[in-house]
Each structure stands twice: as structure tokens, then as C-alpha cells.
Image (cartoon, rainbow, N blue to C red; front, side, top):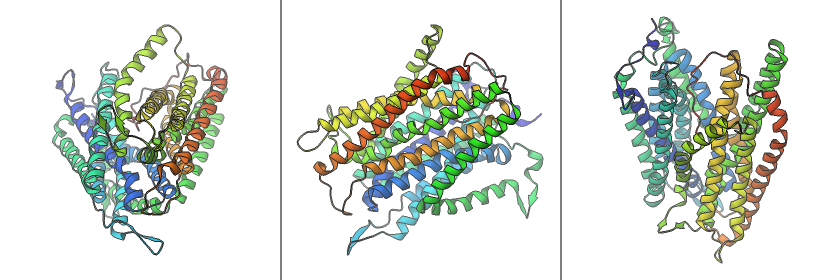
Length: 527
């Protein structure tokens, strides 16, 4: 019998003990990732003195590669490494990446009108980001797959287990944005980035020490080929060596990022056209119509993600420059604002699950296309709210913090209408033969959304002299105009999609169930 079929015994709180090992490991990984993410844009703008538009481009390409790489890492883990080795290797790359982020080098400065940047610090940052990209690629899909393998296929505890695991994701993100954001901008960049690295190392230790709870799980997929040598190296080591080589390649792709944009766009078009051609040649007309609808919904999803990602780009600099960050008796730093998204998810996700269940029992649950339309519409309204808030700025051109809270609320409710719904849509309406490809296209769409986010963020770029403070009175009109443009895009796209819902719902035939084999893809999507 293959060792991967063995389900470990022993439970804690009614679930396999390994679930809580993975919960802690993933919480640490998300802490490190979101802790670094909270500081990165400010690090680019304030430490290296990159212009707003250049900072947005680096951020967008980094995000695009992070969202796409788990598809590649998941494939390699599934075929060659096994999930346990993929988690450990990914965690090691993440530890290296976060450690490199703590190497600041000297702050950039202006000399005769030219920005001079410390080459050691700059190279350390780009190598750090590339290591994190590859590390996330190996770890994310593998650790999620391990959660699925803890349960038998029809185990009623499976959904509860993934819910607990998902709470670990958001708990790590929530704490990280508050703590690392504060340390990085109060005491120094190295403190925030360094803490992220220390917590990632803790996550690696937790996973390694918890190996006894994964006996028989996540092993090598084809043990008889594992020791087969090619030019003196086993298949496993060829993956490791290739990944290290890709760290070097990715480092230069991040710095010279135009090529990444072209590759992702070409890959998107080829993937969609190729998939449609296969379905047209091999499957029935009804199945083709259904896949067309699924692909169309995937294609429009980058509109949502491009607006959502403004929280980590243009809106973050807006908050730093034009917002009063005092809320009741608390005052926070602009690097900490992302904490609201995981907080709202933790609070609202159970309510949304109950809402969909209640509406389903009454036969009035919105269709999948309608949920996508609602998500995009809410993103547009969220941006509009921030634009309206700019109209009520005080005499110092500062906007009240409450406008940001309302914007985060609308974006998060939109996220809950599209992220879990999209994953469910792909697994429900795609035939088994192309399920993996379709899931890859779904994540590719998120990558494209990140690229679009960078392009949109440039609308909010403020021209400035490197190293000089900006006048909030001058920056407010730039952000106000950008937010209304974002809002218009979201609202119009959402309303147009609503008009198309009856047609899409007719072709999707949500009442019918495809005969696909149950699969655990082991992929979760979060922001």
C-alpha cells in the first residue's frame, strides 16, 4: 500500500493533531509574509527613494509572481518532492528571504539631482523578494494539500478542518500587520523584517518537530523513481538546484519587470485559447458553453483583484499622506492598516456562510455570476467611498479614518463573494480531465489582477523630489481623482456583469452537477 494513503490516528479537539501543527506553521508563514508586505511599499519609497510609479510596478510584479508561483510549486510537489519536503524546502527559502530583507544597507540619498542607492541593500532586497516568491510557491499548495490528506475523502470534519486552517492564515496576517508595521516604521526596517524572519523560522521548527503527526502522509509521490539519478543528481535534488537557479532569475525579473508582464499576458491568452480548443474538440456543446461561462467569470475577476490590491499600493501611500490615523482613543501607523482585512474576514466569513445557507434553503441564493458581479460592484463602491471621503477632508487635507474602515468593509465583503466562490466554481463546473489546468488559470487571473493593480496605481502617482516631504494639500486632489476612477471602473463593470447574469446562469446550469471525481487540490487563496 502507498504510504500516502495512511491516515494518522490521534485527535485533539476532535481533529487530527497534525491539523494544529499545520495551523501554527501556516500562521507563522502568513505572519512573515504579511509582516514583510506591510512594510515593503514604504521601504521602496522611503528607504530607497523610488518614485511612486516605480514602487507600484515593483510591488505589482512581485505580487503577480507570488500569486502564480504556487501553481508551479504545487505541480513539482505533486510529481517529484512530496508535500512534506516541499513545505520544508519552501520554508527554508522563506527564512532566507526574510533574513535578507533585514539587510537594509545605507538609506538612499540625492546627489546632484540623482538618487544614489546602496547596491548591497538593493541587491539584498531583490534576492529576498525572489526567495520569498519561490518559497511561497513551494509551501502554499503543499501545506494545504497536507491539511486535506489528514482526512478521509468523505470525512464530515474536512470542511471544519479547512476552516480552522483558514483562521490560522488570517490570524497570522492580522497580528503581523500590527506588530511588524509598528516595529518597522518606529524602530527601523530591520526590526520589522527581522521579526518576520524569526517567526518564519519558528514555523519551520514547529513543522519539523511535528513530523510524527504526518507519518504516511505527504511522502514522495513515486518512491521507485526518487533515487533515480540524472547526471549524478536525484530528481529531488534537480528540483532544489533548479529552484535556486530560479531565485537568481526571478531576482532580475523583479528588477527588470517589463518581461514578466508580457509573459503573464501571453500565458493567459494561450491558456484560455488552448483550453477552449480542447473542450470544443473533445466535449459536448453543453460542456463547452459551461466552460465558456466559467472562463468569462475568471477573465473578469482581475477587475476585482486590481481594485482590491490598491489597499497595498496607492491607498497605503494615501493613508500615510492624507489621513488622520486617530480612531477613537487609538492612533495607528499607515503600515498597519491592512489588519482590518483579516479582522473583517474572521468576523464576517461565518456570517456569510450562514447567509448563503439560509438563502439556499429558501431558494433565493444569488447565482455564481451574480456573486461575482456583487464582488466587483462592492469593490467599486469601496473606492467611491474613499473618494467621497476626500471631499470631506479637513483644512489640513486630512481624511477621517472612518472612511477607510467603511472602504475596507466593502472590499472584504466583496472578497467573500468572489474568492471562495471562485474556487468552488472551478471545482464544481470543470470536468476532471482539465481541473488542474482550470485551477491554474484561476490563479493566473489573480496574477494578472496584480499587474492591473500596478497600472491603476499609477493614476495615483504623485510627482515628488526624492527625499522631500509632500504637501497634503497638493496630494489630495490626485488621490481623489484616482479613487473616483477606480470606483467608476468597479461600479460600471459590476452593473454590466449583472445585466449578463441571466445569460450566464442559463449556460452555467448551476442546478446540474458534473460527474467529476472528488479531488483535493489543496489550494487555498487568500490576500
